[in-house]
Length: 435
Image (tube, rainbow, N blue to C red):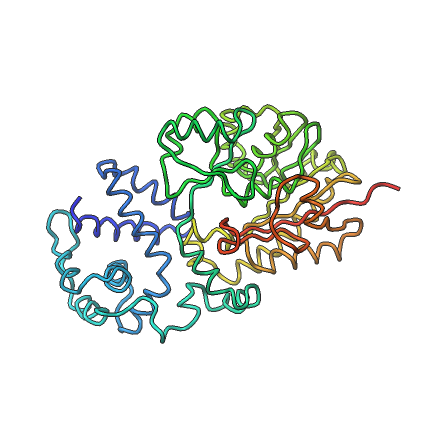
């Protein structure tokens, strides 16, 4: 593709993502490229990398366009990306909009004025409001300031950086060292993650899913923070474990490996589609101890299972603020009403899952959020409402699991700037033993 054709592809891809508000940007992009197989791998990488950069910079680009009194469209956002974010000259950008060889149509008069106004600007203008500069919604800024204080700028800068590719060695099939060697033999270089004893980290986006190591189940793609959530469960061989919000079973796989395929795991979710999608992953990983259960109104299995699990993991639905490195579109779509609705659901789910824990068992509540309302406040509210549960300090969880879980507080709290992981939270709560 020519540089101009790549620009036009980027505009069209932005339009596709912007028009599919209920679908994650990565899923939309994957479908968009599958429908255009004539676009080669290098061109796909250039176009998608620019799309992700535009999404990360979108609040700042919009601010610049508004200040220039320019219309906000996919084309003007691209103009702002090329000039303000990438530093291209106005003449060079105008030359790309020439309709030649699949390039974008020539600039309209309003777009020409926008381009002229954007020329010479810098992305991080000193006059920019803090919310726009940090790339967060106005309503969310006070909550983030309360959460991070003077570390906020560094944390948001880390969320703007591309995430590495983290993998989990599947101990049912290989040690971490064996998995690393298998990947290296296919040209995929990795290094051990600093906290997870199962983790491997590759820089960039190597073709992991095309590798034999992945196809044969030696590794799974999983952020190190997510691996540490699984470690917090302290799942051991012979136990009965419930992954209450299992989704497509990412953490279920880690639990099964920790249990060495001995014991029982119930992977439960409200979505039959997600549970069905887990079947292929479980088979590839060689997991044989998982039973899938649908959570639906009046589910009899939930009543029968009350007080019967040694461990219950609640990986609760949340705002996903901790995943902004990988899903920059999520911060553009998040509304305050979403947080309110999710916090209500988290309370209900947590209480429902707690009924499954046997006396002396452990309930782990986790999110991929960095917001206090979804994390500490949610746990504190649960402890105030539901008797018989008490937090297990992080130091005790380190001793129990043998995993160097980072942090000094009572709960696990991870961020990109602090730990190199996505943003995660987890609290381990033990149910009192029967008298």
